[in-house]
Structure formats: C-alpha cells, structure tokens
Image (cartoon, rainbow, N blue to C red):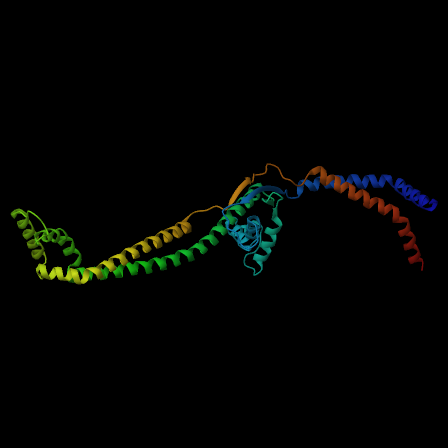
Length: 340
C-alpha cells in the first residue's frame, strides 16, 4: 500500500514539475483544434420517418421488413446515383470497373436506415452540403416508391396478359356461336320468320274449327295480309315451307341461342376481370406514409468548434502527461543502451 502511494506521489511530482510544458502544449493543441474546426468540411444531417402502405404480405415478413429490403437494395443506390449524379458529386471516376462498388460503399456511409420500435423506418442522411443531404432523403423515399411500383406493375402485367388471353378465348366462343346462329337464320329464316309468324300463327289457330269464335271477314283479311307480307319478304319459300323450317330447326336455334347467352355472360365476367386487372396495372400507387418530412438543415451538425477544441486539448494533455511521466524511464533506458 505504501509502495503504491509512493508511486502515485512520484507520478504527480513529475506532472507538477512539467506543468508549464503541459499547459503550453495543451493550449497550443486547443488553438490548433479550433483553427482546424473552421477548415474541415461541415457535415449536415437530414432525417425522415416513414411507414409502409399498400404492400401485400409475403412469407413471414412484416410490411416494415419488406420495405427495409427494398430500401437496402442496390436498385435504390443505382436510382440515387442516376437521379442525383452522385458519381460527380463524390468525385468517383465512372470509367473504372469498380466505380459502382465504390459509390455504393459511399452511399452506405452517407445514408443510414433503421427500423424503429414503433414499426416505422427512419432514414438519416449525412453530407457536406445542406441541399444534397435533404435530396438524399427525399430521393430515397421517391426511389422506394418507384421500385415497389415497378415490381407491382411487373406482377400485374402477367395477370393482365393472362386475363386478356381468357377474354379473347371467351370472345372467340361467343363469336363462333353468333356465326352459327346467323347462318341458321340466314339459311332457314328461323328467327325473323318466327317473329313474323308469331301473331299470324295465333290468328290462324282461330280460323281452325273450334279454334276461335265469331271470326269476322276483317280478321281473315288481316291474316291473309300478314301471310302475304311474309311470303313477299321470303321470296324463296312459301309460308308452309317456312312453318316447316321453324318446326325442324327452332329447337336447335333455341339451344344455340341459350348457349350464346351463356357465352355472352361468360365474356362479360371475363371482361370485368380483365378491366379490373388492367385498372390495377395502370393505377398510380404510393407505398410510403410520411411520419416526419426531411428538412433542409440550416446549420451543420459537425464540427462543433468547442467540442473539437476540447477534444484536441484533452488529447494533448493526456499525451503530455504520459510523456513526462515516462520520460525519465525512457532516458535511463536510452542511457544504458548507449553506454553499452
């Protein structure tokens, strides 16, 4: 205990003996530190907090974790490089093969991205100019919106193409059925004549024995006129032949017409699905919600002149004390080595 006390006293004696030199060295370091703090480049900081929005769920990742994956991707770094001309700003030669890797390393050192305990994402940027540091944060947010929307569009483009193929198939089915109906009607006049004969057939039934009562001459003339018009419009066939065609082909026509209606309904559903997918593909989305916007800093965060001055003074004080504490031992060792 006594030996330790004597050793401490010896150390203090050496420091006290060299106090003038230590004070002079400390003050000199303080002055140089202050001067250096005005020479070094300032560092500005801009910060923003965002929440993810409009993101789907994939595997076990949360939406915040998904957005972190996008923010930390090389696509965002490349987006920033092209958008802000960072190769020129950070004086990196773009003609060299490894310039992108160097630039990505610089961007990683300039932009820090954290997940907060509130499931938001904090983006913090550092740079030597106030304008650039704000733009780094703004364009990082714009970049992640661009990247997610690009992935979103690529995904829905496949869905649009597939739904369009199905829509074209349904249209082909409906058109084919429509063509068969048109050919059947053109060949046998099933539809047009069927409509024309609808009322005439009812009236003709009244003319049959027991089919109607008090058939007047005017009614008979009306039926005759109707049949005459039908024959005139269908010159190739007599009314009796038209009735026969309707009897022979109306069932087939009815089935085709029902099938055609089903195909039209299927086409409508397919078209609705296609329009929905196309709308989703063309829709402009944003995938971030701004909790706090990045501001343009009005003053640098570093250097703090008094901090640089204090660190310089404290460092020199410690070095000076250590020097004068061990200088005697150093001199003794040096003397012994030179004496030998």
